[in-house]
Image (cartoon, rainbow, N blue to C red; front, side, top):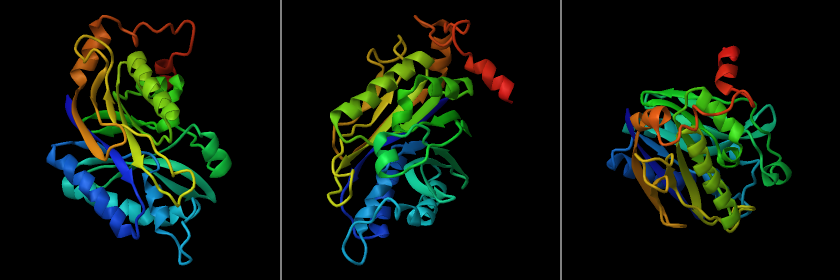
Length: 292
């Protein structure tokens, strides 16, 4: 009923090859393994670092080029998950399906399986500058440590989608994020706390730090990883189990006790999940049963 999670504050900087990217990734995964983590999460859009490799003319690659790295990306993280016997939420990577770009979170299992969750809510930059397409369905993933959901950055700002994830049984929401300023960072951070309180779940944030001077829309990053809990007596008073140092290259780790979630849902000082007024608004648990 316990799981140890690590969240990466991934340092973006210009690189020269995929191998350089792989070495940096392996460093973080090995660090998480040394801490005994069973899950490690990278941030949203961290693979945009590959765009800094550039082309033969010395120009940075574009978002349209990023899907060309998909097979290498999948092979790298699959091998690390198997080798180190760890679940890896490999941030998000831009993939191409039927000519369209999707921002997709990936869960690599220790047995070699891969789960995918496309980002459901697009920011103006994703839509207007990168011509991305939103995902169409929400997945909840079974693991040996319970059910988890992958909701990327802007997704966490929408209460309904997290309600749906909880109704499907998710106890942990992994939220890889990429924000370029304090406003965006705090939107994600504050709503992550709100979603943890509303649904009595854990929310794990990770973020990008550093910069990619040659890559459009990735020149500035403001990031801090955090492991967030409901606000009730068994948990820290601020609902914050661990957080990193803002804009530093680092990893944070904490233990999540699912029994505490079940306890506060049943007999906490407030029981927000049980006390929701489904006579006034949608009962997502009932909707989930109807969809089966």
